[in-house]
Image (cartoon, rainbow, N blue to C red; front, side, top):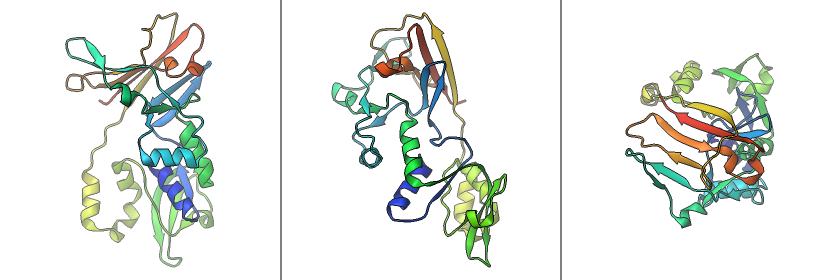
Amino acid sequence: MAGLTAAWRLKRENARVLVFERNYKPGGRMNTRRKAGLVVDHGNRFILRSSPVLRELIVDCGLHGEAKTIERPIYDLHTDGSFTESVTEEAKSDRLCFPEGMLTLPEALRRSTGGFYSIRVTSVVHDESLGKFIIQTEPPLRQQDTAVDAVIVACPAPMAHQLTLPIHPMLYEQFVERMSRVQYKRCISLIAALRKVALPEKFYGLYPPSATSHLQWMAFEDQKCPARRVEGWSSLVAHATP
């Protein structure tokens, strides 16, 4: 979403924008999986209506009529096994989702920016004769398609450090050194389809106690929106950072 949002803002300023994404679809952790009729979000669980940037994105992409309030509660799980609702009634109305999946927003942003390459970037170099940066990819693209005036790198810091090695001499030494020290922990998602499992009524998900568990989130995705339910099936998603 960081890269897509940057592209969206530049496009609004009438800049020519190219987005390079190694996956076949945009969004990063704001993503949706579809299989056997089940629609499961992993990554971002919801967005906040009160966020001015997100509200502007939704309206500008024409999605203001598609965003729905999550009515089912989210709980905090305590170390003694008890749980309490994590937000007030007022805050509950602030949570928005998309019945067709959270990928709805990244896909809309991708369409609005225009140039989108589903391809892996291997490095960023600078061609002094052209006075431009060249985005090198695998498989390679024509140079005239990847020569740009400016580059925004929106990915984990260790990856960004590796991709920009050829242009490190052009950057501030202190910035490069700090970038090399940023740690990144991968998030592991477990998604399971459950058949004939009785789920608690009006229960969407919970936050485990972070002090005692690597687990960060558990949710029953079929209960986010009525349109997400499949008769006889439920879906469970769990997130953890090792």
